[in-house]
Length: 212
Image (tube, rainbow, N blue to C red; front, side, top):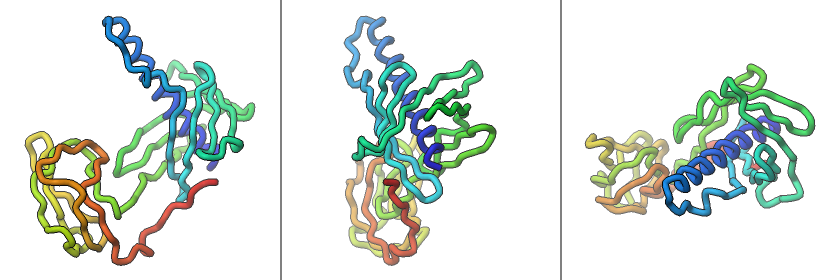
């Protein structure tokens, strides 16, 4: 599993660096001054696999070479190479062993990233934290359906957001007490915190173990 997590992090870091480089060059060709942050050589990646959360720092050493470290523990690291194949796959080399991987889904808040390594599917889990009520999409917080401090049951709606001129209710996934962290009329980006949620039974929610 550790190797699978490293390959997943490598793909995300490599694609992120490559995409930012493209934006940097595009800005230059248009005579614009690109942001220096587009040339960042370090990426923080979090992935969850089989209940274990991997917090990894990927440092780009050259076009195709990365050092992958356990975040906060730079002595725990591996050196890896990655390059794109003509069929869209990724050829990775970790510790002298080569593997071909394909990204089948980048994932979102509801479903995690999926890759295949040697024909075997690896499904990473989304980061499930019911104590933080967030939006998965960009929109506007139109209406709070309950006041601050309301006790809600699993499946209860707590607010309405407007997305592409459509109104969507957001519901809690556990039972607990809500505290608002945002106001009506607020513009929301994906991942923005709307409210915090104090669970009645936090012990019933499976927690991930941090890989060390």
